Amino acid sequence: MHTKAIAYAVGLLLLLGLIEPACAIDADHEAAARLAIRRGVGYLRTTQGEDGSWTAQPGPAVTAMAVNVMIDSRLVPADDPQVEKAIGYILSHAKDDGGIHGGILANYNTAICLSALDLVRDRPGMEDTIKNAQDFLRGIQWDGQADAQGQAVDRGHAFFGGSGYGKHGRPDMSNTQFMLQGLYDSGLDCKDPAFIRAVAFISRCQGTASNSAYRDVIDQDGGFIYATSVNRDLVGVPQSMASPKMVDEAKAGRQVSGLRTYGSMTYAGVKSYLSAQLDRDDPRVVDALRWISDHYTLDENPGMPKPIARQGLYYYYMTFARALDAYGHRTIHTSDGIEHDWANDLVDALVSRQCEDGSWINEADRWMEGDPNLVTCFALIALEAAVD
Image (cartoon, rainbow, N blue to C red; front, side, top):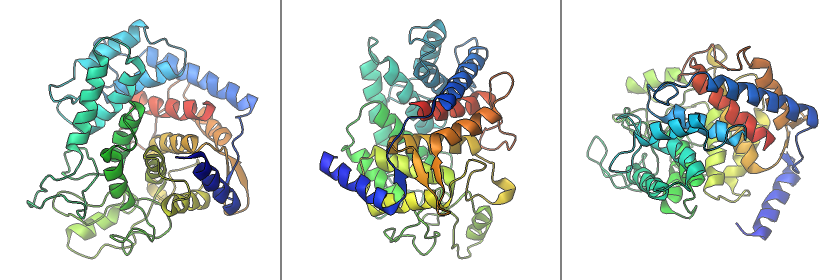
């Protein structure tokens, strides 16, 4: 993005009152964050498996996250024995086709492993492993394949540009943002067609006027839902984890409308737009920033119904921090007229929730957030973005 365009975009958002110029996290919060990071990394030091893994059940992804946060913390060197063992574990899952997984969740595992392997890319043979994994991710992105009904996934198809877990037979926002994060971290040119295709999918998950495919179905507040399809059989019937009853309606063949947008996917959408080099004055980005202004909180995953509002809370913290760090501005004006320093607020939220042993865990155990290894990695990624 050209310097003049950046200046124009930032100026526009300053004028709208949604952001303020960047400022450093204050000294007290930085000290608290670094102590929490040290304790969190110390916890991970005690939970690595004999085979070099952390939480091996879904594959090498959690191990790769642990490598990321340990190296990014600057507390653990890249040649540390625990890191060496973890890298060996990750590489033991590398397939001939470039994927890095244990037979399930191929996109999710490969993408997260790519981010970790980029940190040790100077090792012999690693450049080839990284390139092969990039090619694998681009190859399984929905583009030209046939769906379960035999329909070609062209640019007008609900799946186009997205990536998924595989088990549902359709793409989703979470897997798509992990794919983009892995490709971005590993140095793939942001003009690569994979980024362009992904933006097409991501845009269809946003409640905004430019979403001609689903603007009558998703709440028009600038936020994001989870997927453009419930599963392989309900193609083009969008799904939001914040509207769980809507899935039953869709499966019963009834009209689905008014899908709620929510925090973790909205911040994932913003981060993905920025990874794909979308201009900050693009109406989709501006609309998403308005959603953030209207729904700013660190007490829950905003937009989720109150009984389940803490489900995915630490995933939310991670996407919140990555998106706002990528945006590059520390202060957000909310619709009530209050100015928030998001990094300081995030540090307060995470430090207050850290366990005595240095870990984090979510009592609202959904999406594996009952696993302290995974949740501690989410929390450390968020804190490291806050003090970056």
